[in-house]
Amino acid sequence: MQIVLIGSFVLMVALTLGLNALVISRVIDDYLKSAEAERIDRDMELASEFYRLKAEEITDVGQRMAKDPRVIQALPDALQHRAEALETLDQELSRKITIPNLSGTHFIALLDDRGNIVVGRVLWSNDQLSDRITAGNWGGLPIIERVMSRNAAITATEIIPQEFLSQVELAGQAFIPLKDTPKAASLPYEQREGTAGLALTSVIPIDLEGISKRVAVIVVYLFNNDFTLVDQIRDTAGVDTATIFYGDLRVSTNVPDESGERAVGTRVSQEVFDVVLTQGQGYEGEAFVVNEWYITRYEPLLNHLDQVVGILYVGARKSSFDSLIDAFNQRVIMIAFICILCAAFFTVPISRFIARPIAELVEANQRLSQGDMSVRVQTYGKGELSLLGDSFNNMVEKLDETQKKLFHQEKLASVGQLAAGVAHEINNPLGTILLLADVMYKETPESDTHHEDLAMVIDEATRCKTIVADLLNFSRQQDVLTTKTDIQALLEKVVADVRRNPSFDQIEIDIHFGRDVPDIQADQDQLQQVFINLLNNAAEAIEGKGKITISTQVENGQWLVIQLTDTGCGIPEMDMGKLFTPFFTKKASGKGTGLGLAIVYGIVKMHRGQIQVQSKTGEGTSVTVSLPIRSTPGNGR
Image (cartoon, rainbow, N blue to C red):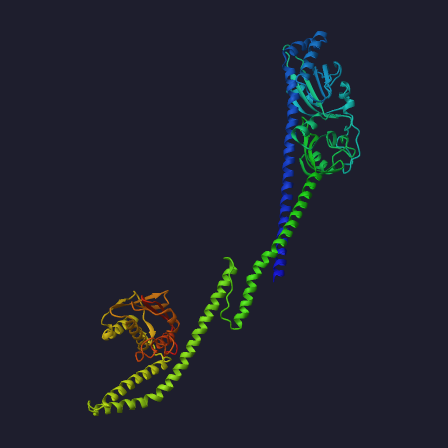
């Protein structure tokens, strides 16, 4: 059994831990996926915020340029190509683009109404300024045409064609050779990819009093081969990787390629192409980036006409999340394995503790089956096994008690049969002896020496006849004639009868009847004999003055309980087990037959009742008779 317990317990622990490990693994996996999605959403929010702040930054530079009084004052003369005015504008332009210092590649210029460059400068990503630019025409750029026609400032992400970039020496930086990229679309999204540039562009019109011609300031931040913004997003916001696409071409990124270099010139996958560029919707999920899988988020970049011109991307390597999940699963498996070993180690003493009382119970049952009523088991603790041990011990005690009662009843039955036979055999001769002795006694003079002898013969014959009568009563206990019986009325009658007996002269009988005591089916004559015997025994136990208390009550709605308590001498503890044994008596010779309580016991049992005796030497005795309210006595008619 111990092996079965160990195996079962270890198996249960293994199954429980395995199931828990599986559930925990699934929960952690779901949590990490949710955390991945939340992180990517957060990364995109941060990247979009950095992108917006950059747009506001170049817009602020243009606004300050357009509202500067010196710029407004010098512009009319500068439009006439006067050197002093051009110098003033160049100074202000240089100061605005360097204080505060703009990080990254920027182009700032003042344009006339035809889009001609009045004066301009390029701020390279190494914080160096280019030479003054005074030639070139950007009037053909759609965003400039729209600003000039509507006289309203616009900031947007725009495509700057090569012909405009070459005028300000930015065509070289904008050029990016396209690289073969796995899973990319077969054709580029925009045919000018690789030569044209993608830039944050802010164009702000300037109103000049007295001049009908419109003038504008343009500020451009070129993304091609400039990594300032994407690295700022990565380093400041804690984003793993960030990329700006012109169409589907990576023009600014910190995603590495196979050689560890920036993957500039690679293209987005066909799956992302279809969702973001073609449908104009955001994309979130796993995506193949350059040469490995990433957890990604892509959002479209729109120009001033709300047309998709590029993509803003953030992502994290999927392998980093997978390695985290694998490491966690390995630890869960290791913990489960250690727990199983610990369970197996601790199961041995536990199984012994459980199996020991069960083995003792098995052994005790075997001894009990062989008739050993002295067997008992030791109880351990206060749990179920302790209750089982206590139940077994109680069962043995009840079996022993029942066996003794059955033996006693069999003994009573045998004695009853013997008594009936003996009584019938000697009753008639005894009657003849008593009759003749009485006749002779009456005929013999008192002076005759045989007169006293005849008186003794009559007394002893009378005593023998009483014994025979008791034997006959004892033998007739199996005949119960039941009628509806009022126990309380019966008790009152019995008390009235016994009070006539001189032995009750100094004894007070106190009666306490319960309320609503129902009638029962019983043999009134036999119950009368029971109560008379009990009252007589109580009176004989009282020397001098004393008290007998009689009470009745209903218990649990099933039993009618009659209790007789006296203040007599009590019964020694050594005699308590012999009270109902036939012919057992402690009275003096000639004072009792020892059949009274045996008859009482038999009558109560034939009524399917119970009788209990409690006594303390020197204090008194209490006899409790319990009779069923609804049960029919045995052999009743």
